Image (cartoon, rainbow over all chains, first blue to last red):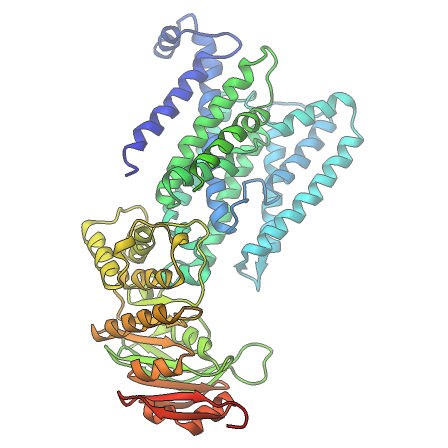
Length: 324
Length: 260
């Protein structure tokens, strides 16, 4: 039943990337984009190959990773409201990034590195808080630990921002809203190499997440090991989210809503859900980023603002149409 | 012998009295055994101990001749199907998808279900009489239909042992009877079946043996006529009862009103 939809989704993903290469502050015709892709010396080469292609690819990878993380976390915490930022990871990244911005530290790699460090620290802190009896990762406690760590870091961020100067305040604010402006072949390479392992780990456990959504006992009786599965899933999604936040700031909405959209269209089995969410999440973020730099050039709207402004009405429509 | 548990001792940390003490239980292929007893008598603890989900302080459980603690979870799921007391599905699947989850212990991480798996799922749905509504979503089912779907899922595991924990709780008479009829039929097909239930009268008519628990100890294990005596039932459930005999020979329990 769903087989015929793969070409559709794949086509949509490719179309989003084509749009990402053609549109922007300087629109480029399809023929010129094609020429630039085949030949670095073409007139549009520097823009297409040097700027837009790495940005589009990184947007796709980040959007896909966020959507997959959200889908897995929703099954893991058994809560449809879960998203990749629920568990304190973004808070850890934010406080580290805001401190770096407030201190006026510069350098291409300092901000993402600090954000990644903060995210990983929060990830491990939440993980440690959630271990019950030494080894069992409890879903409810995980959620609570994530929420309190988020609350704590957001208080810290507010404190630091209050003490910052206006220019730094604006920079920090823009960073937190997220954007792909920093994308380059280098950052794409780092993110791609890094995200492969967590994505493969999650894909291999797809069937386990179907069982985890039934509750621990039922999952165990169908052959899963819920404790191990939850640990693996939390660490893998955490690593993905940390890298996404570190490179692009906090891009909301993708991780929460793309999985629900796919479930409504294709059903909740994870062997379909995870790859489909990856494709749709990737395409959606690329389109949102394309819009963000085409609306009012040379100003780029934060992509997180666009994902919500465009995504919320679309999702509301989908909800209305699939409600029975 | 499918299941052989001897002299089980289970203690929960912080509790002075053991949750289960000196309980032994054996199950042969095709046998339907009902486990009953008052609330808190250790029925669910016994099930968990038999399935290797609890550490034993004493005694041992053998499944197909091997200590159950030596079985891995996937390995166990290829031999034992369990229908737990409660289960809520977070993201509702169709009936057919739900039953297909029973094949997961047999599939590699990314392998698609083959024709053989699909045939087993179809047969499981037939046997549990849920094939008629295979494409309905599980959140649209009645309580009785949902229970039969979960039995079908357990059947898709091709179990040698089927364990059901109060499968008819909160079902009306018809759905309750349908579940008991189904379980009896499955036992007749050779599956060793362990059924935890509060329905003494139905257990008396359907089960080959009844295991009566009280305060973590075994009161009696045998045919209904030997286990469901007035003395046993009144003492264990702490309420006066009268026993009559139904035309099929099964004892039937009538709880007495005060003064009767």
